Amino acid sequence: MGKKGKKEKKGRGAEKTAAKMEKKVSKRSRKEEEDLEALIAHFQTLDARKTQVVETPCSPPSPRLNASLSTHPEKDELILFGGEYFNGQKTFLYNELYVYNIRKDSWTKVEIPNPPPRRCAHQAVVVPQGGGQLWIFGGEFASPDGEQFYHYKDLWVLHLATKTWEQVRSPGGPSGRSGHRMVAWKRQLILFGGFHESTRDYIYYNDVYAFNLDTFTWSKLSPSGTGPTPRSGCQMTVTPQGNIIIYGGYSKQRVRKDVDRGTQHSDMFLLKAEDGSEGKWSWTRINPSGAKPTPRSGFSVAVAPNHQTLLFGGVCDEEEEESLEGDFLNDLHFYDPVRNRWFAGQLKVLAAPGAAGQLESDDDDGPEEAGVAPVEPSPRSNAMLAVKHGRLYLYGGMFEAGDRQVTLSDLYCLDLHKMEEWMVLVETDPESQEWLEETDTDEDSEEAEGAEGGGEEDEDEEEEEEESGEEGGEEHPSVAPGELFADYLPRTEQHWLRCARESVGPGAPERRVLRAAQALAQAFYDGSAGRWTKGGAVPCGLK
Image 1 (cartoon, rainbow, N blue to C red):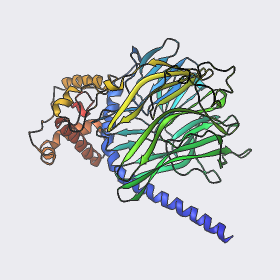
Image 2: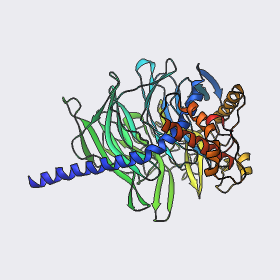
Image 3: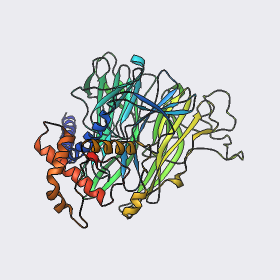
Image 4: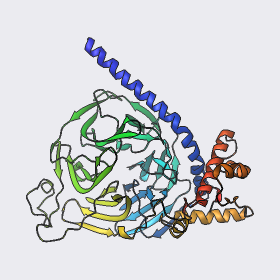
C-alpha cells in the first residue's frame, strides 16, 4: 500500500510540475502572441474582402512544408491547405487552398470567403458526412523573422459540398498548440499531444481530447495505464479493431541554461476504448516485431491499403552540445496492426502476384540491382502524404544543405499494390531555389521579390495599394537614415496608433492597441532596413 501511495503521489507531483510549466510558458508567450495578433488580424481583414468562391486553374503550388494534404471522400481529388516557406531571411505562412484533380493531373486554386488564418503544423481530418467535411485544428503562425510564434486553438470545418468555411466555437478544447495529431474515430475527432513554444520557453503535451461530431462538444479523456511521454510529430492512426496507435515523435528538454536536448522517440502505444464504458479509455505499451524504422523525427504518415500504416522519410538528428547534424531519409516502412509487425517497403521491377507479400521481401533484387536507375523522392522531412485508390501521393517537404534549408514543391505517386516505381507528377529543381543569406544587402533583398511563391503575397500587396489609394494615399512616416527605432517610434506614434486601431477593430483594449501599434511600427522599421522582402504582405498597407 505504501509503494502504491508513493507512486500516486509522484504522479500527482508530475502533473503539478507540468501545470506550473504550462502556466509559465503561457504567461511569457502571451505578450508575443498579442504582438502577432495585429498581424493575423490584418491578414484576416484582407481575407474578408473575398465575398464569393473563386476557382482558378493554376500551376502547382509553391514550395512548402508542414501543410496538410487530404483526400476528398467522394471525388478523385487531393486537398492542400496551409503550410510554410523560409527563404533564408523571411518566413511565409499560407492559408491557400489548392485542389489537385488526379484524373486530369491539374491544379485549381480555390478562394473561399472567411478562411482560417494562415498557419502551418496544423492537423486536417476528412469525414464523409454532409458531402464531405475537412476539419482543421490548431497549428502555428510565425513572425516574418521566425522569432515569435502564435499557436492556434481554433477549430474549423470546410464543407466540401458547398465550399464554405465555418469556425466551430466550443469551450473545453485543447490549448493552443502545433505538431499535434488528430484522427477520425467513429463520429469523433481524437487529438493527442503537440507543443507550444515561445521565444524562451516551450512545453510538450501528451493529453488526449475528443470532439463529438454530433454534439460539437469537446471532452478531455483520462485514459488509465501508462501512456506516451509528452511529444509532437508522432504517428497516430486507427486500427481495424477500432483502437488508436501512437508511435514515435519528438520532444526536447532543457538540460541547463540555454542548452536543450532533443529526443527522437521510437516507442509505440495502444489507446483503446473500453467495451461498454462510455468515455473510458486505456493506454497499453506494445512492442512490434519486424524491421522497425530507425529513430527519426519529421516523418510523414498515411494509411495504406489493408489498414496498414505507411511511414515515409524524416530526419535523424545527431546532436552535439554546439551543433546539430541531420541525416535526411527517403525510406518507406509499413506497420501491420493486425500482426503487430513492421515491414520495410521495398520497390520491385516486377511485382509479385498479390499485394500481401511484397512488403516483406528483403531478398528480391531491387531496381538498382537489376541495372535500372530508380526514380524516387529525394530524402526529406515534413512532406505531405495522402493515399487514394491504393496510390500514395507525396508532396513537398524540406531538407538541409549545409546552412541552407531547401523547401520542395515536387509531387510523386506510388502504386502501393504493385510497389514497382515512383512516378514523377511535378518536378522541382532545388538548385534553382533562391536562398537569401542574413548578410544580404538591401539591394539583394529587393531583387528577391516573389521568392515566397504562390502569388498570394503579391496579390495582397496590390490590394493594399488600392486600399491606400482609396484612403487618400496616406503614406507611412519614413525612417531617416541611421535613425534608431527608439527615436522613430515616439516621432510616429500617433500614426501607428491609427493603423493599430484599424487592424484590431473598435472596442479593443488600449493596452492591446498600443502593443499592436508598436508591432506595426517595428515591422515597417525593419522593412526599411531591408529585413522584409518587398513582395511580402505587410501590415496596414506597408510597402
